[in-house]
Image 1 (cartoon, rainbow, N blue to C red):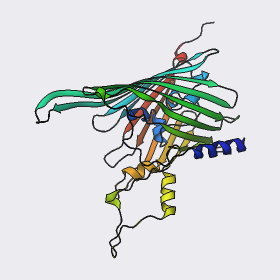
Image 2: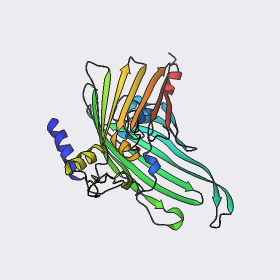
Image 3: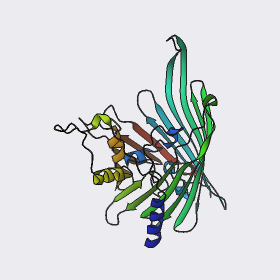
Image 4: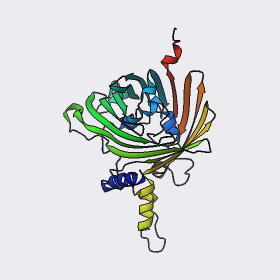
Length: 349
């Protein structure tokens, strides 16, 4: 098994391209927004934890399984200013066919005051985007599972509208004792079907990711390692305002090749951990190096790139809350609740 995992890792590295920055290259970026406070608390945008959490399947469909049957989950994120977004997901299993999760996600950018080229007000307008997703997952055997998400995407920005479709494809390996899971995910394979008011067709935010999670044997702790953007190697951005100048020569001080490699390598890595306190309480923490490098202010870096969360089970409900520091201006609040509807029905003998 170790040899197979090593060959898989090498083959993934072989397809990494040398493209540079990724911001602003694609449309429908909202479909990559974090779906769960648990994910946000551990620093990333997907997880490989196989414990029947329906909100994890929106970003990793290979986790969909029959134990999620009749489970319902909703989440809400109070983002910045008047921007907010949310998810709702429901799971159903069909014998001999597979396990399905239907989900809806949206983002509301708020209401704006419109104006023409002369500055004359033209009235208020709305901007928002949404997607309806159908997820399918199946256990191949005791060790491997596969899954896919089919996404129907709609974007409305003032009078500009666009439709698109995308597919996520994922596969996971689960250890026999359930303590270790590894997932490989190809996200947002698809295209924009109709452009905004007859404009050019834009690419979708395709990404190849791999993730690992391991629950320790003698401690109530689980760690998570995510490797993002395997399809792009160069994620560095040279900020002109942060350039260091040699006071004697007046020339820009360049990073060494080793420093550039280490910086680029770490931009692909997200680290997270989860402390399990009994069966009804958990605490999450995470660190996203790339987010910290891109959004920190040099004079006051603070906790940009760090995140934390807490999960609690009350009766039939699982409630999660998280905060993730993107900028000194504030931290988005994530909250979610999930439950199994089957728990509310008592079987009659």
